[in-house]
Length: 356
Image (cartoon, rainbow, N blue to C red):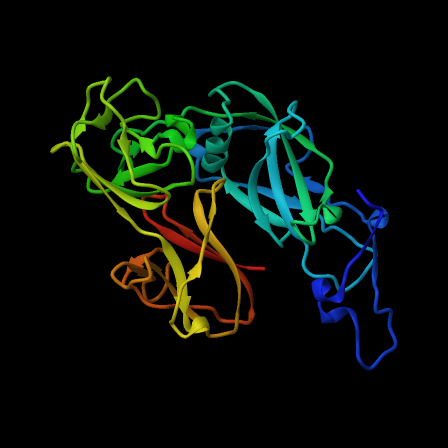
C-alpha cells in the first residue's frame, strides 16, 4: 500500500476548502498515520453457543471509527467480514456495509451464515471477524483493516417445531450450493398446504432448484413432474426459473403444482416526483434488498415491482414496520442519509429504516 495518497477535491468534496480562507488546495492523506478501526464486540476470545430457541435474540457488533490525519473527508464505509479463523480471509463473507459503527444480527441469521460456510451443527469452530474500512471502494490505497477477533461459535441444526409458526419449505438450488440448511424459505401462514415467498436468483449458474420440507434431503422433496407440476419422487428432476431476478414462488403441496412471478422491486416517492424507479442492491449475507439514500424531512416513498403499480408495498397507518400491498406511503421525519432494507425473506415481509 502506498504511504501517501493524493486526492483531488472532486473526490473529497468542497468541504476541504473555503473560498474565504487561505488553505492548502492539495490536501495530503498520509495512510501511514491512519489509526485503524478496532472491533470491540464481540470480544476476541469470546464464545457463543447458538440456540434455536434464541433465534430472534440479537448479537451486537461494534467498532471504533477509522481516524485520518486529514479532516473533512467524506464518510468512511465499514464492511463487517467473517470467515474461518484459519482461512486468512481467503473467501470472507460480508455481513454488512455501513457508514455506522455498529450492527446487529439475530442468532438465527448468524446461524444461517455459519451453515452456509459448511459448518456442522453442534460442532464448535473458531470464527474470525474483522472490519474493512475505506473512503473509496475501488481505491485500495484507502483500505484499512482492523485486527482480527477470533470467536468460538457453535451453530445449531434448524428445525420447524410442530404447531409453532407458519409451515415452512426450504428452497435449495444451484444458486446457493444445493444446501437446504442454508436455503431461503417460503411459508404457509394458514397451514393449508399453499406456500409462497420471494427468492433471488443471481447471475450465473443453472437457475435450477427444488423445494424441501426440512432443512435437509432426508424428508419430502419436491421436484419436476411436468410443466408447473411437482413430483415427490427422490429421483425427480430439478425445477427452474428463466434467469436472474427476484421471484415470488408459489407451491401447492396438496395439488402438487407450483408457479413463479418475476418481481424486481425498486424505490419510488416524492424524492423523484413519483417518476422512475431507484434501483435496490441485493445483500446476500442478510438476504434482503437495500439502498442508502439522502432524504429531506417529509419525504414519502414506497416500493413497487417491475416499474408498475400492480404490486406495491407501503405500511399500515399508523406504521408498524410490516409491508402492506397498496399500503400508506412511508414518511421520514428529518433530513439525513438513510439505509433502507426491504426484507422479503421472512414469513411476514417487513422493512427497516436506519439513519446514518
